[in-house]
Length: 140
Image: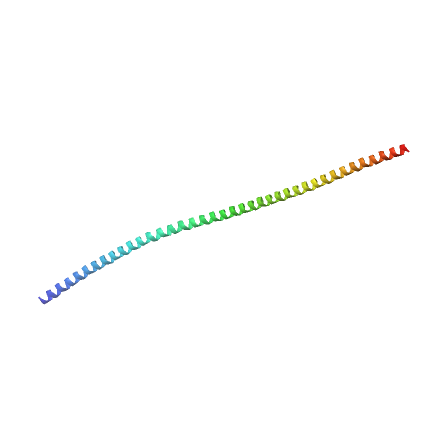
């Protein structure tokens, strides 16, 4: 009887060990599934973050290219404005030069008129003196 009790006890211990082993394997499998689910969930977030970062990098690169093009266009506009400004200054200089020449020509005209009038007056006076001299000589 004691022998049968020991056998039965060993049997039950073996059965419990087996059940414990099955439960341990089930617990390990469940923890592995949980870990895998958590990792998958994290991987989805990481993958989404990676895709977002990739998009941000592409947009930043595109923005940089746009800013560079804008800077080039701005420099071209500035050069064009400088050219136009220089041309306007030159036109102003030409206008000023033309006014100077016009004033000089006006002064030359005035001088020539005065000289012509003086010359005519001296010719008239000279002719009158000559006529007077002739009439004086004719009277003698």
